[in-house]
Structures are given as C-alpha cells and as structure tokens.
Image (cartoon, rainbow, N blue to C red; front, top):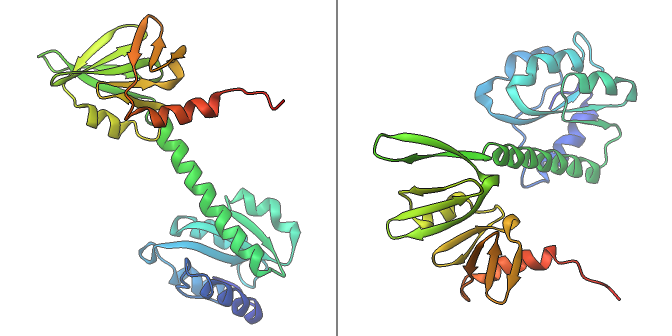
Length: 236
C-alpha cells in the first residue's frame, strides 16, 4: 500500500488485516521509498496506490511497478485520473472515501476476473492436440471440436472424428483426465463422447451421425445433467 495520507493508510490497513485472505506486506507514505523498497522477490499480489502524491504521481509510479505485482488498484479522492489509470493497465480504480464493503468487493472482483482469464486461456490452449500414430513416430494434429467419441479397444483408444479414425496407445482414464471439465462425457465403460455431437438420445443409446453408442447405467448421470440443462421445456 502506498499513500501519503496517514488516515488513508490506517483505514486500508484495517480493511486488509480484517480480511483472512489478505496479508499486509508493508505500507509506504513516501512513494520514492516505495519504489526502491518493492521488488519482484516480495511476490506481491496487490498494490493499493494513491495517485495525488508529492515528487512522483501514482500514475508515474505504477508504470515502474507494473512488473512487481499482479494487480495495481488505484485509491484516490479524484475521479479525473480514471482514464490515465486504466491507460497504465490498472486492475481497478477506487474513489475515496472507500467503504469496507466496496474494498472487499473490489478485491473479490479482481481475483474472480483473473480466474476467468486463466480458465479462458486454458481452454483456448486446448483446442487441439497431437497424437503419435504408426511405428515411425509420426504425430498428427486433432482438433477437439472435430471429435465424435473415443472408444476403448484393448490397450488402445480409437479416436473417431468427423473425417477419420485414429488408433492411439492410450487408456480411457488418461483421456478422461485430460478432458475433464469439458463437454466430453464418459457414458459407458468403453465410450467417451462429445456431447455437442449427439444428434439423438433414445433410452440408453446415443446417436452420433451413423454411430449408435450404448449408455451404461453407472455412467449416465453426468450426461443426463447436461441433457437437462440443454432441454427446452414449456413453463405452461
């Protein structure tokens, strides 16, 4: 925390110390001392930074501290700095006086936003994968959006896509671990299907194009939950 007003430092210190998820590493009333005192080794998540300070403004200071903390939250009594604040990639902009609920909500919003970014990045990085086929170490790219289902075949997994099939040395458990949290569901001891490719559900069977996939009683709960979420029903 960096603020040249003792009263502001005291208030934010109380807010931080009352939050079990936050730990106050240190506070500064002199921005130049803060600049020399904060390093990457501190592994700081949040810097709460006043803008209107002597010698160097919070905006100027933020440009020098961006790589030393995960998030910078500006705390100021003036709204006129808002545009400048976001031009230096500030996470949030709090206007004084800052209430405790507003402070807590801001911290929560920043962390939640970061979590969503990471999840989105993780998903986008898994749009495709490579598999080794044949005895020459050949690797082929498979887009996940093109997969219809996985089928267990002894010590191998058959990956059935919209274009062709691939026989890969994998286990169903390995496939399940890699695709957990996606729209792929284990519906049978031998089948792992892409729910978005299912055309019809009849009893305990799924139809994907020309394929008919059995659905085992011990595996169908997850897929049935997906069906319920996607089923359009009348409220009449």
